[in-house]
Amino acid sequence: MSRVSFVRFLDSLTVVLLALLVGVLLTGGWSIPLGQWQVPITRPENVLLAILPVLALRWRLRFPALPAIGARPLVALGVLAYALVFSFITVTRHYAFRTHALDLGQYVQIIWNITQGYGAYTSMPEMHAWGDHLSPIFYLFVPLFLLVPGSVPVLVIQTASLAAGAVAVFAIARRPLGDDRLAAGFAGLYLLNPSLHGVNLRDFHPAVLAIPLLLAAVAWFDANRPIPFLLALLLTLSTREDAALPVIGFGLWALGQRRWAWGAGLSVMGLGWLLLATGWVMPFFRGAPYPHLQRFAHLGGSVGEIVLNLASHPLATLAHMATGDRLLYLAALLAPLAFLPLLSPRDLLPALPALLVNLQSRDPVLFHHRSQYTAFVLPFLVLAAVSGYRCLMRWSAGRARGSPLLLMPRAALALAVLLSLALGARTVNDLGVDKWRLSGRQRAAYAVMALIPAGATVSAQERYVPHLALRPTVFIFPTGLDRSEYVLLDGLTYPWRDLPDYALDRQGEMVVIRAGASEHRFAVVAEQVGYLLLRPAP
Image (cartoon, rainbow, N blue to C red; front, side):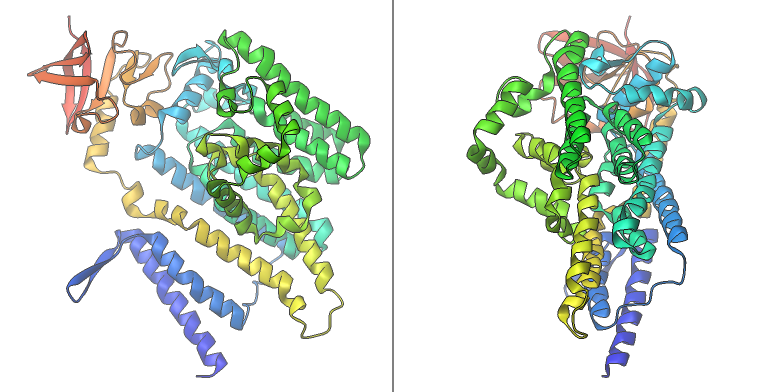
């Protein structure tokens, strides 16, 4: 078979596999008999992974011609496609009860309480929200909630914000690469990044809004526009108390560029906010010390003590980070960018404070590449990847025709695309019809929830809390059983594995929930397909 014929065969095979992928998405897949076995083809993720080696071989033989479209329209199309696809995924996940009380339900309740004039309070657990995380950016959601309150607008705003980050990536990459098409390519890589997908699908977190804000700050810093740059950093600080870490990182980056005044000022600004928020503001609202330092108990009990121990014991610091799961976390962050950030260590400086905190934590969620804790790292990895690609371009420039180095930049981009698709393949599963089409039982849950009056105090299992969060008081079952006007349960989930001390007994229209010596009696108000809506019995 000639080279041309083999390329055509690979193109045909790609089309067939893409058709198979669409078929699995639309039907839920099939099982194919193979002798005495049944081979399931039910996960879209697996079909996408099968396509990738075909694409890799095709690109190795002959790289496809890029579409004849301008760079700016390409970026605009990418932003629009991302916003539409991920808005669909996040909203349908919510409607299919795949979101959680913590953190979507909690944050929606906080914003709603602010909108209603109750202040930044939550009942999960009952406290002022600034005693848990300091996120004054929630006040910017008030106009939206006055028009369209609920979980859906929050999820859509988060998705649209992350999509808009591609515009900033395009602006960052244009000048160093000197090619708008390449800059558009990096904007596309950003939109394909599996860490970006992970934080987008992990319900809602205000820290995630820092990703486009930090990217915009980088673009404005490069463009010598200090006012929008500082505004972007102030908004970043408003997302969470630990958003001070990337601001300190900005200071390190400016110092690395010998912009001494900026470096010192930004470092002081970030460190000052961190100390003020964790040492005074949050303890004031909580009535207790800052709660999240327990993740670093091996380093000390205060921010100052932790910083001192990290600086005074560098070998122990490095040893703690050199574990298999943490190294895998680093690899998962770098692989979708073809490890290009490693070629530009100076541009990795702003990522170091947040990365150090994540790697030193004893909580595995902090060093998971799809968790919200990558929000303060990802923007700077993209920045360093652009600089690393520029290094490859310099090395390949002036080489003799036919030199392998001439292929390195193009090969790095192809590798980045393939690794991004491979590590983010699980995202395509959320487009499958079985993930978003509501079952009769799910519709029954909505029918039962509709019977709960607005404003009534409710205790509900955690998957239903985000749908009941527009009220001053909603508890995560079994909390609040003695104070709730209504209790919502999925009776088919009993016995509750995570609540071994709780027992449910039903006698006709009466339900008794026992925990040790305590007993709570309820009358059944409504029941559909196993869902129970209860009220305290007289």
